[in-house]
Length: 71
Image 1 (cartoon, one colour):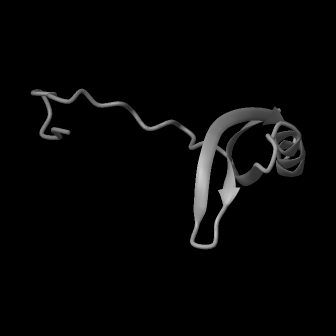
Image 2: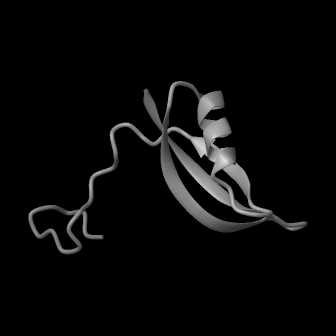
Image 3: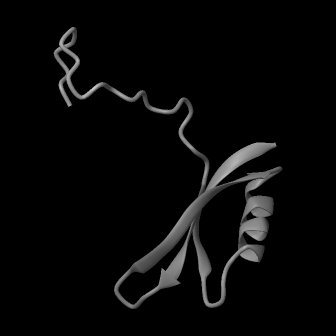
């Protein structure tokens, strides 16, 4: 099983209105899309289904004095 990242919302004429995000474990992208559609609220739609980045980006300390990268 793979983990997929799902974004829910309402489509508008000029873009989207996001209402929520979450993770779904599924066998394939189509299975994840179907499972996400079943968990939508009234009038809500699945806008995007993506795989999360692998590996996740590292969180950096805001003031890391041992590095030249200061966030």
